[in-house]
Length: 210
Image (cartoon, rainbow, N blue to C red; front, side, top):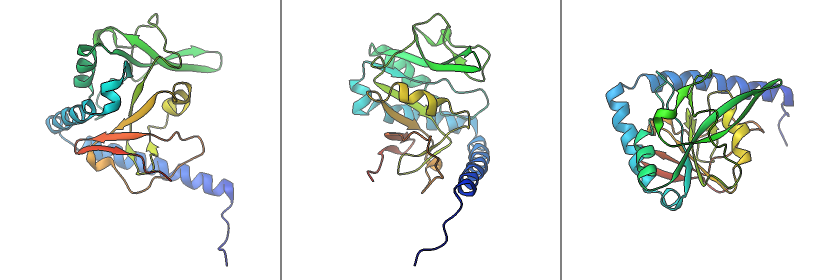
């Protein structure tokens, strides 16, 4: 005999509330890591990321610059390596349009071109080339947590859930998190975009096939 079916609206509300609580928890947990330890962990993540076959084969990658005081994984070392290997490097961007913002990734020649331009994160110059589908081979995605199914807990803005479908496929995705940000199961919603793989300071992992 089947148990009672939860009202869909109530279930959706519970999932949203669970995400809010988890974001608060993992923000605090990540912020508790001392800056020197966070830098060492970030360097290890860059080393593991550089070993990925998808990274070695990529002609172009999309990275992100860590938000100030957020405790995010710093991919500065991976940026330097990508440019050394001749890869085109893109970064997230937003532009105001009627009723909201357009989102995407713009090309950069160096990290000095990244500046705060009205959002909480650093963006490329607004005149830089905007990536279209097929321009990016690999997208590195920040996260507060990740589970074995590839569900990612983001920051609540929806940037990547909106933007990734414009590039993936053919681009593949790699989330970057510290080891303690891997969890057994995350609440998910229909709009959540699954991540292909992820890298921590302990190694790299692939999404479990359902």
